[in-house]
Length: 246
Image (cartoon, rainbow, N blue to C red; front, side, top):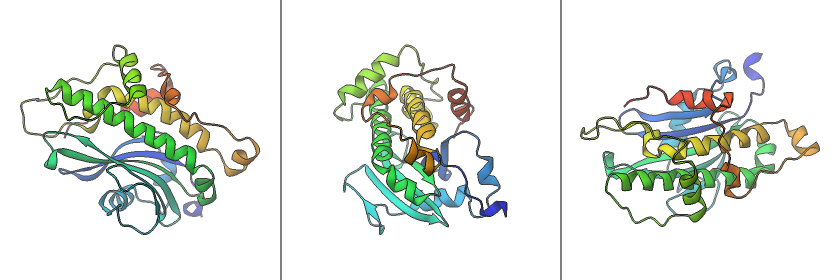
């Protein structure tokens, strides 16, 4: 019977890696024991569905026919629904010079998903913009200017934390191999994780709590203004990046 129980929500950051195929970069929370005990959920299968689909043309509710594609998909696999934001990061070593990426909020409660969709969509969009602007900064550090117009609010965030959050050391710059995903936007990762932890804590509450005690998530980049490097949950999530080398 345990396999049929409703499981907790979670946030997933993933990419389509030309070496490994669809792969998980980070989950929030970092440990998902409830998924391992659920007979209807397989993370690899879920990644395959969300990262190999033609998200421009699938049947469902979506917005914006541009490079970033935010959307809602229900029953991706049995009774698992998601709000997703697809985007790309630049990487000179990758095929086509890009790394297709996705941020997803996953839940089994479809009613809650639609109730919170505006707040979650906005939070995922802001997260993607931080990643992309941090990626532009990284590309410029390599002497490549891709001509992307910076978001002033995001630029201020990145500037605020540039001395407190040190980018990971570059691995084999001269070698023709892919870098770990988080090294494409090093400062942005910590900023986004801090904000998404708050989103998770607010949105993962049961539907009844959402109705009786609604919480508001900031609709501005203030959501990402405070990065607590000593927070236990933050450290646990960030530890997933340790030792990842493609």
